[in-house]
Amino acid sequence: MIKMKKKTIGIIGGLGPEGTADLYMKIIKYYQNNFGAKYDSDFPRIIIYSAPIPDVVESLENEKITLSMLSEAAKTLEDDGCNFLVIACNTVQFLLEDIRKSVKIPIIGIAEVNAKYVKSHGCKKVGIIGTEVAVFRKKVYDKDFEKIGAELIKPIPEDQEEVTQAIMAQLAGRAAKKDKQKLIEAIGNLKKQGSEAILIACTDLPPVIKQQDVDIPLVDCTQVYADEAARLSSRN
Image (cartoon, rainbow, N blue to C red; front, side, top):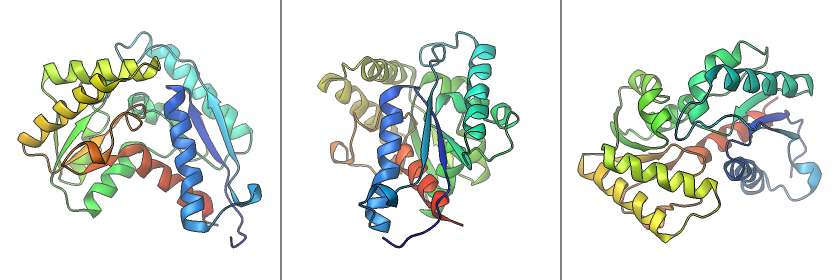
């Protein structure tokens, strides 16, 4: 690997833990696949702050406490020398602008990065699966997709309930074939509604649903986010 000065990545994680691990490993894989990294010294410095926030999947227990905890995580990572931050969760990024106010270093937004990715691929109608809070109540992706002129197609209520159950099963470490099938059915219905691709907009879902499971392009939002973090860390 060509030696280069690498920026330190801060990950606000624990939201849930397996999604955090998935984001971390995707950054590592990017370095291996694109920079030929194999020695420990080849990889960027990464600091993970695991924040046990109140529930944001089935409900919003306390937004003020959640914001306070995430802001504290951001400030700690900044103090520890991180050059920029990513947040290993789609849902809590409805608080992104407020969290950004707590630090001077950049915090990369997952919706912003994925909107740029979708625009580069020319998609105009994109389905989305994620938590009810992210997709419907706080509309984490809506603003950024409106900016690129892409329509977000959202699950019908019955499918959203099934998606939420699959997310909760994965958080509990009990995701099974039935949970994958729930996601496949929800994705199939989004395709019927005119979706050209599907955003997997929850960091807990990529381990459950894969491209080979469906016949419509999936956008692994965690992968796109991780790739951007890896690229940013490699730039001087």
